[in-house]
Length: 83
Image (cartoon, rainbow, N blue to C red; front, side):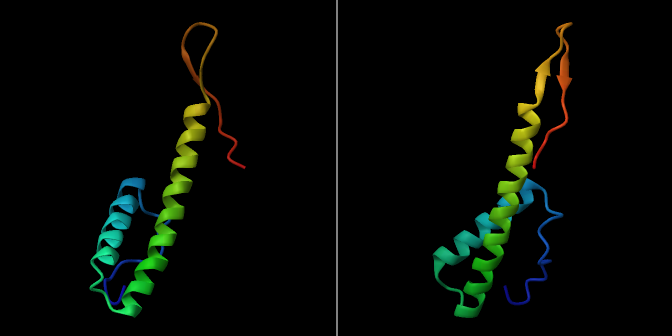
């Protein structure tokens, strides 16, 4: 997105930050006021943000799925196998 100053690397963003940025990009694209080059850049960034959010959700789901009750009634966390 021409000159926005945002890093093209989304891997360091939290889920919330990535989702917020993705929502802003969608609104900008829906407005239809961006020139073609900016719209293409926004779409490409949006695709990266979407994938990042999906990966974060997958990791969170795996962590939740690994929570179980131990024999003494305590909560036990098992390592998540994300592969």
